[in-house]
Image (cartoon, rainbow, N blue to C red; front, side):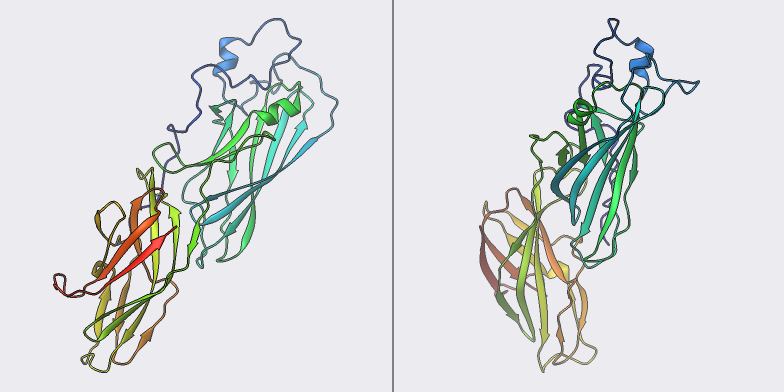
Length: 318
């Protein structure tokens, strides 16, 4: 049974300031008096009850567009923040739209299981809206983040304060700032060139490749998913009715000496018939290993769960 990989991104986002920064990017620099406490308490995108904006700062009415072109990685997606647009409104505020491209690197149709967060000056924008599309396997789709500000005096400064965040501080996050010199905080998936063979009785296991990616499971900050693709070959002596091959038959010894069983997020469950070859693109033995995941591993396959002569295979992740 797969673990629930749905996250809640409500409070534990990095960079959150306890100071009242929400309006920093929005206040009119020429206004002598600062915002009132009620204005600071008001989330982005709410506006005034009568639809007007406090202070009524003036703008030239022209949209400001900034090309971003920054990419991070999260939950099997290449996520590229393409551009951001600020459009002044008639009340002295503005609408903001951040255009994002989601490239699905997996073979399954999928949507992000977690809602991203928009930070403004390091503070969560509770009024932001998110369009996270369902993306076909190996395909791409457009998404966006939208919000509004009550008062705009400098669109470029506003854009400098915006950051899109995927995940919470308890997990491995992806952080994409819109400021030109802001650095993306994200770990790219790594393809592994691995090949090896393990033979036990009438079953041959071939490792034909792998990946190393950050874990995005709740509470696994600093952990990596080491996934090894498994090809299964049955011998002529497989009994009638076939032999079951499960993910529980795989384990790995990590570079720091830990012995780890395969995790059920890689649910190998095959019935192997006599002289059959199973090369399922979804069959991965997955291990949750400490970051950064580099070093020498020893993989074991044991369908008997205790054989003293269970086959092993050593490989190195650089």
